[in-house]
Image (tube, rainbow, N blue to C red; front, side, top):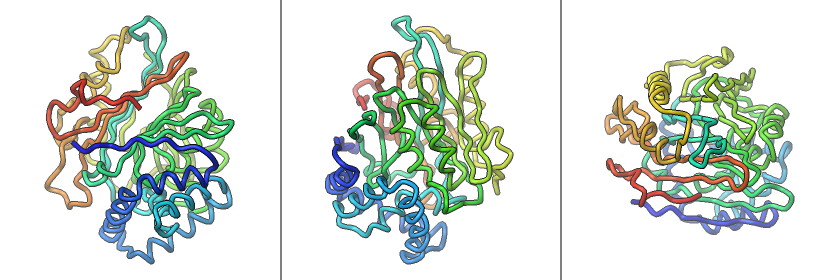
Length: 358
């Protein structure tokens, strides 16, 4: 199985970026090569075409969140690449809009934990293409007067899936729908702003202030509860937990009628239905991270369209999606924690010996 690097970053945004870029230089080079191939295949964009789009987003990032632009510059200089290449990585969801099929399944569940105390779980299988797995990293970011961030991200990308020391956590599901708006912030930048927030309400205010450049779903939570944020450049819509304090989301809009998919995301509705069905078989008391992995996220029903999905060899190489990792975040009074398991292609992938603490 691929060894996933773990890096700790601190200092100014530029210093954080430079350390990120220099520490993950090889991974960033592979990311750029891979995504430029994907952009050429999916969007018919050569390098200059990608840079042309990236320039518009760079101007927005510089205007709205100049500190994070400095971090992007730092990554580029640390990795010794063009800054527009790093911008392109951070807006890859917006550039490849409508073509990707990363079939992620995410959930939030507020339950009674093993110790009898209330626990807010955030958990997700993240599905994408196999070549990206070797470019993932476990990242910790310490910044003055901000919560410490812990996340699983792709090399070169400043925000992704994770949580912070203030017990704010985020998950991500891609939604494939036009339009995009380069005057608003890309989803990976919004995720970083969420992870810098001290409460879910503060994170939500950042999203509402800056807007989302593309249609995406963020599952946002803190100790007070969770919300599904179905985001769109046109209109946001928020979904709240059911009577069992449970929420789940996959890769289609559930309630936001402003998000008009050009085609149905394969398997998304079936995965969502399957998730709710599996949860109905579980008690909301004494739930553990191990139970969530074994009873929900290891489920292989529906094959390539399942919650835990093997690689689909029938698709073009750019879109052979598969489950790459599972994360279960536990938000509770005291120290929040998360466990991550990286898929190794076999049935024993969730074995305890494969579990790493984020």
